[in-house]
Length: 114
Image (cartoon, rainbow, N blue to C red; front, top):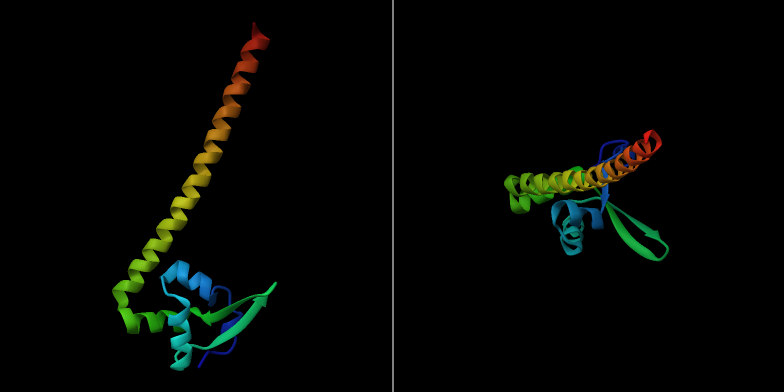
């Protein structure tokens, strides 16, 4: 089913945990897709915590079949919005830190001129 090298391509696979975050599908949805033969998977285990790794393209195709293309578009937009909000929070924090440092430097400069 999978193309040659698809498992090794960056971003082509995702874990069941990431699938839940990005697409809102749970573990049982993935297992049912595997049982139906619509998803290829690999098992992983780190420090005793197992996970399933599936191909993103196959998962998106299964989600489209079950919930429709609109659902997939909506989930992708929500995921992108979460990423943007997170980046904005980081930038705001850095901006606040820079503004505080700037104020300290300005005060220090004013003291040296007096």
